Amino acid sequence: MKLVVQRVVRACLRIDGVLKGSIDKGLVVFVGFGKNDHETLIEPMVRKILKLRIFADAQDRMNLSLLDISGGLMVISQFTLYANTEGGNRPDFLQAMNPQEAETFFNKFVETCINLYSGNIVSGEFGRQMLVEIHNDGPVTIIIGREK
Image 1: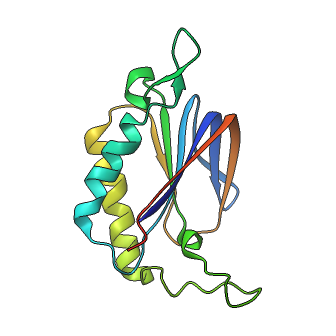
Image 2: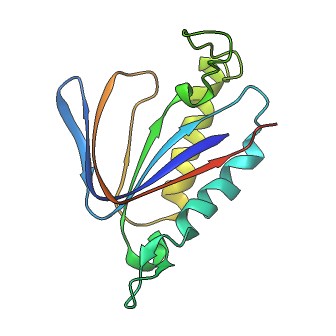
């Protein structure tokens, strides 16, 4: 599983030109699943992003988590995190999980977010073309991944 976590001041998600949802201060998380991932990884990863201390405290130090600030959370599936460009200019996605299984994993990821976090959560729709508007804060971008 690979995650790209971006701290934002706001973000919105459109699908087919229709606003699906928006968040204010919080995190946008792009999540991709590899063909060797298993469901037991989902809950620990969700807990990690909820507790990731990347928001400023009163001393302007990154010391607060999404839980601490009650921020928004946007979750977007993104198989392209498994792009391999070593063989040329056209990426292959051979290490990405097959779409049917990845959709199940993504839905479980979102469900876990909802179960563990009571704040504003917006999720993308698996396999859909989406427009994600992100206003990065910092910018702060954290990559969390499992290569095995």
